Amino acid sequence: MCKTEYEALVNHRGLKGIIMCRYRATYALIFLFLALSGLMFLLRNILTLENLVWQTSSHTAFAQMKSAPPYQAHTFCSHLKKVTPDEALEDRYLLKAIAWPKLPARPAPVPLHQTSDPVHSLFTLLPSKGQKEWHVGDQLEALVQMHNFQGSPKRYGGDFLVARLHSPLLQAGVAGKIVDHLNGSYSALFPLLWGGSAQVQITMVHSSEAVAVLQRLREERPNRVFFKSLFRSGKLSETTTCIPRLPLNYTQQPLCNYTNLHTGEPWYCLKPKLLSCDTRINHAMGGYEKPLFTNKEALLFQSRLNIKVVIHASGPDRINVLPQKIDETELESSTIKAEPDKYTPSGYYYQGTWRPLCGTSVRQFNDSSSITQCLTGKVIHMYGDSTMRQWFEYLSAFIPDFNLHRSKRVGPLMAVDFKNNILMNYRCHGPPIRIAPVSTSELRYVANELDGLAGGPDTVVVFSIWAHFTSFPIEVYTHRMRHIRQALVRLLDRGPGTLVIIRSANFVAMNQTTSKHSSDWFSLQIDKVLRTMFKGLDVVFVDAWEMTLAHHSPHNIHPPLPIIKNMVDLVLSHVCPDK
Image (cartoon, rainbow, N blue to C red; front, top):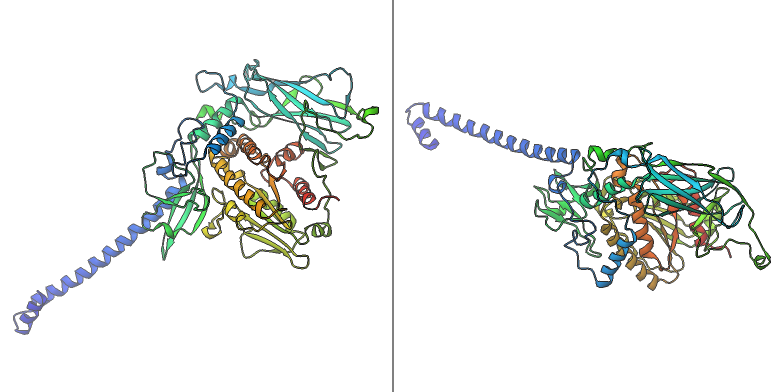
């Protein structure tokens, strides 16, 4: 076309043709520019919209996930290798160990006025058996009767109660044991471990009706906490939602599978629309599904009304404890011994110091020199969540801390004392972990890390893994702990003398929001699984559950410094036992 018109121009046939050609060429360039601009604008808005969707709620492909009926271990994880008969037997045993009393059959939801009310409920101190006085070594029992908001006695169990015996004057405290009689009454048992004043405190953490709602959430909304990952290639980036488990019938949006090849720990992210799965660069906390409670269910989770509210006594709430009775047959030993028919806690506070009731006695490490002397020649590996990082931060105040240009919250963290040959490091556990953005290269599973250690008498391994698993089905935690346990067995076999210390779960501050994913009831269930799975293994437990319950400080996911010091002193006492 243009060539012909050019020839026409050369032959003096007129300028009209060449002018039209130039106009059309110009229009074509303008059209091409607008088309490219429109495409870039469209791609940019697609990515912006995807990020906006993530920020407001979980991705719709995950938001509708439901599990099957309660405690069906096969509901999730269809991609995992089948469990062995022994593992299946252990799973059933663990589910039995954490079984909770069921509510009587009746229409749901239960009206608030028919649920447990700690203000109307009362406890009574029972008289001592066969004597009129209380002595160190005796057991105190309090009987609790729960009532509803109308003042009527409850006729079934399932309330989540906790108890402690304490003496502010003596800075003493011990966790009590709650026995559910399944008829609305409960017994609180306390060992009498010090002389002088002792006051009973009983608290309703959740009503039985609230616990039933938490059970429903765990079974029906297993992904109510979700995560995100950023994918990037050149100047193009996308953010998608990630979770650890998929239901059997998931057939929706394509996924990126990041299952750990070493242990089989699953992890999935929605596949980016424009990028490949191998462009994933980080992991971070995503958000929380909403809503989770119905309006009537929300009434069961009200601060100062039915979440962690103290139950008062119908009479005296304290006693005076006299010194321990010692007859001629007991003169050779005046220590308090555990008895089969009595409740024996792991320890208690006296004058602000934690005293274990069995095992290693606790030494006081109050200065840098005593800590350095204990840890000389040691390598300390710490793994877990921020409750373990607290221990690292406490000890790093006495050992030079190398930041390694890493986030203080995310890590990895390292402290080295070259003069005394001390190496201490901390690394967070692998997903699920609610954390600020962390590079995928720094995501390590604890079992993988343990398999990379040589072990031996100069190696100390410490871990705390619980807080980031409270919102998921219990099988997610069981699966993780099973692989860690297997790795610990291998470590102890190849490195005899390796000291392994496990920190349990602790109580946290709670309100309606945190109850949905971090309730103490979820932590209690996880704590029972942890203790059961590692029972009989050559490991040391630091009972953070009792140490936070027995202490006078308000509950916090990160216990205050006095509790942390007692925990670390206990750890160091095992590293350097009193000879």
